[in-house]
Image 1 (cartoon, rainbow, N blue to C red):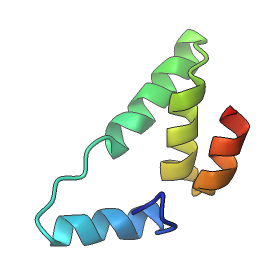
Image 2 (image 1 turned 60 degrees about the vertical axis):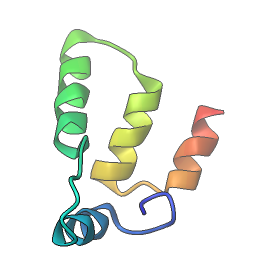
Image 3 (image 1 turned 135 degrees about the vertical axis):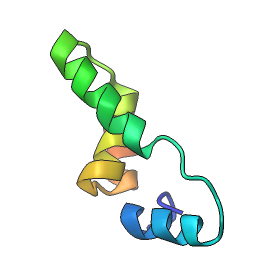
Length: 66
């Protein structure tokens, strides 16, 4: 849903309302904090974090990874 342009928070609420499990949102923030603490560069994970937690446009983030 996020890849199709839905707002991440709206997508998560919509999925939960339909009884689906949303995985990875909370752990994305935890991994991001741990990577920063340890000085790790995780470009793919950083892209996921930016889309889910900073509302970065998915297509722009993917272009930056290329």
